[in-house]
Amino acid sequence: MSDEIKKQEETVWTEELLRERRKRAAIMAIALLAFIALFFWVTLIKLGANVANRPL
Amino acid sequence: MSQNHKETLLKLQEPASVDVGSAADYIALMKPRVMSLVVFTALVGLVMAPGVMHPVMAVAAIALIAVGAGASAALNMWYDADIDAVMSRTKTRPVPSGRVTPDAALTFGLWVSGLSVLSMAVMINYLSAALLAFTIFFYAVIYTMFLKRRTAQNIVIGGAAGALPPVIGWAAAANSVSIEPLIYFAIIFFWTPPHFWALALIKNDDYQAANVPMLPVTSGVKSTLSQIVLYAFVLFGVSLLPYALGFSGLFYASGAALLGGLFIAVCLGLALASDKNRNLLAGMTFAYSIFYLFLLFVLLPTDKVMGL
Image (cartoon, rainbow over all chains, first blue to last red; front, side, top):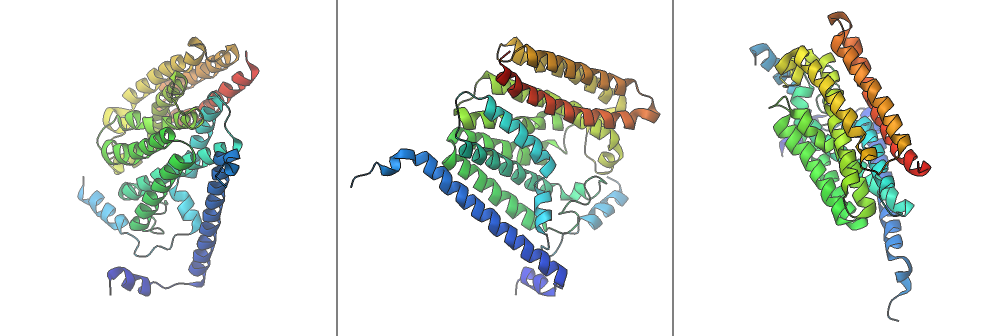
């Protein structure tokens, strides 16, 4: 067992710490979704009218 | 370094064993107050650039510059955790206080840096991505790892990192760099030393305890005060360059002259202050310097809109 895993297991995860951890995970998920949405939107803008310009 | 100081450092350096950092800790790791100045100056650079940028692209560019700046701040906090732990101003930061492990701060800083630069290259353009990468490298490696603990000129040279955001903003919009953004760079570059030396005067004991060779620590208060006044005069001249070179009008020039004149007066007040009042006036100089830079960068786009 690595030291890191051992330390993780020794840490007492109080209710407050767990609540903070869930909040952090939720905020990270929102940030990632916002990043994906921004990436998608920028891609659409860059492609512009060229979206329709493809061989059929 | 005294034995006591070494012991204090070792005691406070004890790294957190497990990352229990909250979302707020990770936001603090990105130095949001510094980030706000970066966002603002980058936005001015972007607005002042020729051509029109799609609003969504502009939002993406500014967000990526902010995230890149935040990532370099996280790398700075990872590397500086030992000295942050002995300074009153910084000891509650996420790493020295043990809420975020050094490994977690490093990993976060590296990933977010990479992500911001790559996204800048894909979404905006290669020039702005290269400038962002250089800014992160300059702040995290050149300033934090090499200059900060070695020379009293740390924040003079290191100030280049903080001065680059308007250049990145300009490059994001125009895909080129011309004389205008370089003048904005020069304004922030010459603004940085008096701004930070005013703070260093107040926190002189902290910097001494942490063995950081800030100017008041290495050259004394008197020499620092002369340097602050000297930089205030140079800044006054540099801030008028946009008018002298013909890309800002009389509205900007009068505002810059008024604000710059006041800055010189505040710095002279600090230089002539008695020992008793020095900290108070250093605090005022520090606060006014932020107000000064903010207003100067408000004047630039306002003047452009007014077209005077």
